Length: 204
Image: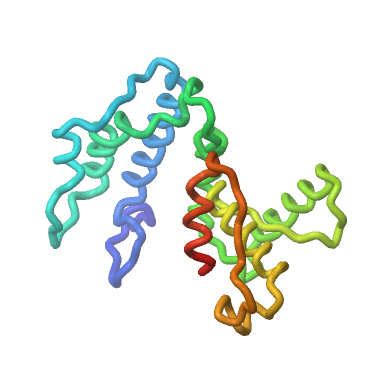
C-alpha cells in the first residue's frame, strides 16, 4: 500500500491522504503569493454579515474538513483582514506580512522545535542575536531574545528594567517585596501596550 494513502490505526494528526494534503498545501501557497503580489489593488473593508455568519458557526462533533475550512478562509476571512500588509498602510511594522516572512513562518511551524531541546533553530535564534549585537555595537557578552512583536518587546524590556532597578530580588520576593512603589514615566503618545505591560508586571 502506498504511504501516501494510509488509514491510521491509532489517533494521529497526520492526514489520511498525503496526496490531497500536498495538493491543498501547494494551492494555499500559490493563492497567498498571488494575494501578496496583487495586494496593491486588492480591496479592503469590514467583514460582511454573510462573512461573519460563515465564521461564527455552532460547535459540531464532526469537522467540516480542510477543503471547506479553506473555502471559508478564501471567501470570508482573507478579503476582510486588517490591511496592514498593504503598502499605503503606514506606521505599522509587521515583518511576517512579506512573502519571505510568510514562507519562513510555514517552515518554523512545520519544524515545531523547542528551545529546551536545543533544536537546530535555537542556534539560528542565537546567531541572529549575535549579528544584531555586532550591528549596533553591543559587547559579545550581551544577551538578547527575539520576540513576536513590539508589544512583547516592550513588555520584556520593562521586565528587565524593573528587575534591574528593584532593590530586592524580584524572582524571590516579587513586587510585594519592593520597599517603595516603582513609577513609569512616559508621554501621552505612548503606545497602549505599555499600560498593559505595567499591569501585567504588577506595577499598577
